[in-house]
Amino acid sequence: MKQLKLFISLLVFSLIPLNAIDYTENNETQAFIKMMYKNFNYKQAYLHKLFKKVRKNPIDSQKRTKKIVKPLSEEYRPQGSWDIFSRMHLENNKTKLGIKFMEEHKETLKKAYKKYGVQAEYITAIIGIESHYGKNRGIYYVFDALTQLAFGNNKRKKFYQYQLQEFLRMCFREQVEPRAIKGSKSGAIGLAQFMPSNYQLLAVDFNNDGKIRISQPIDAIGSIANYFKENGWKKDEPVGVRVAYEGNRFYGLKTGLKYKYERKYLPNIYPKQGTFNYNKKVMLIKLEREKYDELWYGTDNFYVITRYNHSDYYAMAVHQLAKKIKIGYSKKYLHTNKKNLYASTIK
Image: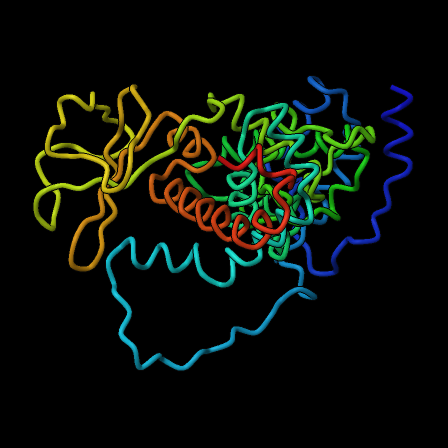
């Protein structure tokens, strides 16, 4: 109780906006405040003060940037759904920056592999896709964005009320000012872009400083590795491999995350290159190109990636970026230092 009073007394409301919305008259907000008091002993006066002046526009105006309109390229670019998705998530120097990130944080990534069994390149790829290696952590004030989602007119308000609850609890545990934290427009936070409900369950204090800060690389790396491990990641098992099939478009068998097949019943579908040492059932992941379909085997580890974002395209983007980073890193560093710390972590 004394801790809570001390925390409240230290809060500074210097970020209260001039143009704000009063949510204290909202019946759902009032019920939320009472729930937070009853379940978690939050002072109602403090919560009333928070909800009294919610930023009407939660975007940090200082971080707005003008869109750069690039001239249309004379070279035609394919327009299949995977062509477009992969351009959005795999370009913009993501591989080059990922190689640099791995080198800068090699000790932490080695530690994460040793503890959780998650390869360095997959942790790095998640950070690259989620926050562009920390360059794009979000420009929305999370408290204000979640408040509007939680008590506004949308179909997922119960979900966002829970996220708001967990966000406020996280702020208390970590002794941070709720109005100061920025993230995505849906409330995701840090390099790892965790939703608040995942923070207590899966975020870790990986540098043992008594605080969890997934806006910092060390805790973000450990938290992503823990997220994967808790969702079933198996150390050194493959994620996926591209396979061959007859024709240019794949029909006949159901594809996607819901369907698994024993490979012995897929005689006309086989890895395009090399061997694939995986004896469990596989998913068939179809990537639609403009003129043909790419087909891949997806493993249990592939499915684990989709627990981060429930999309097979997302998981494939992570997998392909990880592979690009691994190859690029190996070329740049491993050939010059055979005893490099990643020699045992990049498989």
